[in-house]
Each structure stands twice: as C-alpha cells, then as structure tokens.
Length: 319
Image (cartoon, rainbow, N blue to C red; front, side, top):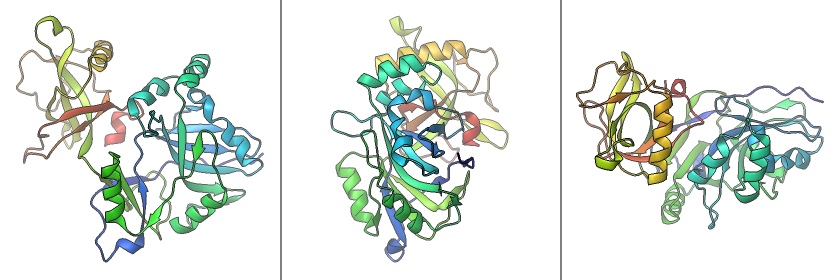
C-alpha cells in the first residue's frame, strides 16, 4: 500500500473575471457551496477524507466510501467539494450542516446519510500512482482527472470550460449559483497558499467573520440573538466590522443561541470595544459567512445579512 503525501488545499483569491484579452488563459469551474475536502485513496480500496483544516471527516460521509473502490489499485490524492444537493440538484449548505458534525458519530452519520445524501465534486488530482502532480500545470492535471472517469452514485467530475468566462458567469447567475472559480491553465498546485492563479468570482459579495458577541432580541425573543457582533482579524487583534441581524431562520437563531451560550465570557474580545449597549460577549471561536453590499472607510460592512455558519473553518483560517 502506497504512503500518500499530506496535501493542504490550494485556495482561491476573491476577485473579478479576467479581462477579455486574458480570458482564454483560464478555465472556469462552478463555485460549489459546500465543504472543501481532500480525498486520499492508497490503492487498497480504502478512503480517507480531510477537511480544509486537516481534520479527519471520513466517518461523517459513509456514502462516499465507494470512491476508494472506484479508484481500485491506483493510489491518489484528490481535491474537491462535498455538497448536499436539494431536490433540484443544487448545493444546499443548510442540508450539508446536518452532516458536517457527525465525524465522531459513525452510526448516526450512517442513519442521516440515508435521508440526506451528499455528493463529492472532484476538481483536481495532486498525486496518482507513484507520482506527485503538484508541479504539473492545471490543464494537464485536469486532463488526468478526466481520464480517471470518476463518475459514481455520490461523486463526479464537473466540467471546466476554457475561456468564455462572461458567459459562464451569466449562466451561474441565471441558475442562482454562487459564482465561478477561474483557474489559470498554466498554474501549479500551491498547497496551503491563497493564490492569484485561482480567482473566485461571486455573484454576491460575501465574507467570513468571527462572532465576538451578540445582542438579545426584543420581547419574547430576549433569550435569542437579535444581532451578532462581527469581527475580522486586524493588526491590533479582532477588528469590529458591524452587526448582523437579518437573513436567518427561527431554527437557525435557536441553534445559534445554544452555541453562543457555550462560548459566553465576561471579556470583550474586540481590540476596540464597540459602542453598543447590552452586548453579551463570547469567546471568538465561531466563524460565519455573511453577505454585504460594500464596506465603509472604517471597514464596516454595509447591509450585512446572515448566510451560514462555517463549522469547517477556525478563526486561524481567516488570518
């Protein structure tokens, strides 16, 4: 059995579509709304799945175990995104959250998988047989990945389109998808690096934030969060970037209340204490993603709206 190299995922940089003159130098992939995953198959039919942080998440996804058998005796390291498709086949992150916390509960994961199946979208190969491919150009890696013909009940290799970025982006908008990732055809795989060779273009502006506190709701909702106090890492520590109090469901708000209670602290985690009344502080461990329109000169988010929790990220991932 081959000992596989540990590979940290390469990350994309937020940006805009490449210019028309550069368009043909990039391939475009649909940006998936799921959990980043590195898949390790040593060639004996087994499978190991690691999250972006490196955590072993194999047990959370028993419905992906067949991927190891699909590769047979070919040792490989693959990069992809785990999604939970809705009835229309589109990624639904709220559905996926029901699966993400089950790595320590294999029996429960098996039960939940029967009613909430996931799908692994494969988009890169970093090691195959006895050869590392991280120093191989993206276009060649994609060709190798396509030749593996990895299409199964819970995994597939979505197409990448060379050029035609504007048309591809318009297609994602029409389909209410997150956006695109533009990948330079000549780019090498840079483990753990956020590279300009990969550009993520979102249809809506989003950013990851760290929750530093919350404000209670009004009246009968006093025990639930009415707004979360958001922060992002800065030179002096956690920088306050505003509050978010819209965009979540009642169920999400109730679930957040439980998480916030576990993180309660009497110490303000922000480098400069926000001028808010009635704040309840929490240890800054919770990462979330919010939508927004723009930023003020002070770095505050304008018109933020809740999008989702990011249990797959830690505050260190935002630094």
